[in-house]
Length: 364
Ligand code: ADP
Ligand code: MG
Image 1 (spheres, protein in one colour):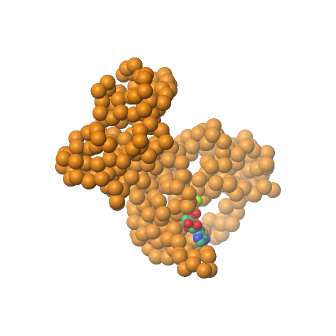
Image 2 (cartoon, rainbow, N blue to C red):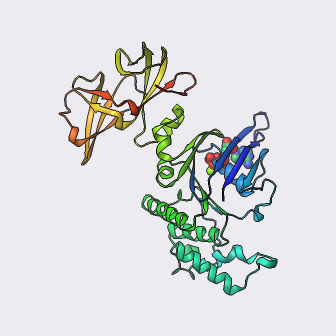
Image 3 (cartoon, rainbow, N blue to C red):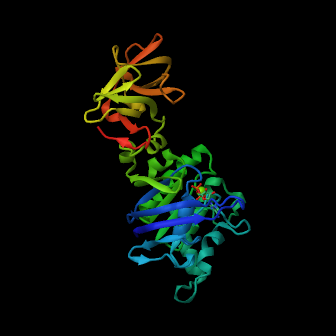
């Protein structure tokens, strides 16, 4: 089911009695979330991700704006009538109930026509348990499960009513690195199999990029950019988005444009046709550097890390705000890298420039 948000806004009053400053946790979200996709809602801690999910599932009321599921407006509909499944970071399982009892819990409160016999409930629980691969663990208590297994139970519980929309709030944060990787692939598979429109919240850009059909990048309550992960990575609209996506991160230099040439210090590093003279930030992706004996960008060489297919050249430059510049070079093109300095030319498509004041992208 598609989800449409119109000017959705949530303002919290100040928590501090002395200051009148309110928090705009979700600021004027207007967006259409396509049916049947896995959407990564991505942004730094405190940017309003959980609030946005709480508005969607009905746990909180918006200050203004509207929410539609398909063609139906649900803004005022109580949470239990929205047909939304929710998975939280801390699993929130009932410790005294078995896995089976935890999964069927949401079915037990159904009334009227929806009421089910115990047998049907167990059948449905078994179905989703198989889907998330915990069907051998049905009689265990949560304390007898690993973190990854507990999170699968939570996912099964969210799925058992066959929700129209599945919301997951940082579901992998409590898992160790290996399980996090494995569980995110599981979530991807489960979403593909069920085709339930899923919104997956995380502050981890790599996590969001790796499993999402579409990402929504937000900061301070505001949506900064939406799109396919690769598109947003290749074509960031502003400096924040450019810096937030990518590992190793983009390398940001102070620079300027003079006579349609891009300068870092005294060196003209690239042609930038059609851009008027001004001060800029220059973001260079790690894969945007090319080793070249007479390349105009000269950095102080720190070390070379060899990783088989690629090498990473670690260097420094006085005008780069990153502590170290990491450039990833195909090992085949590896010339001798030694001595004090390393020289680069740049791949134009991997270089983005941003206005010094607005931090908006300047296209060339
Ligand atoms: P995230 O999930 O992205 O970390 P949240 O949605 O939890 O962010 O919070 C967004 C902002 O709203 C934060 O500044 C937070 O302090 C504030 N906030 C969240 N819930 C409340 C609340 N119940 N009352 C007041 N402020 C809140
Ligand atoms: Mg949160």
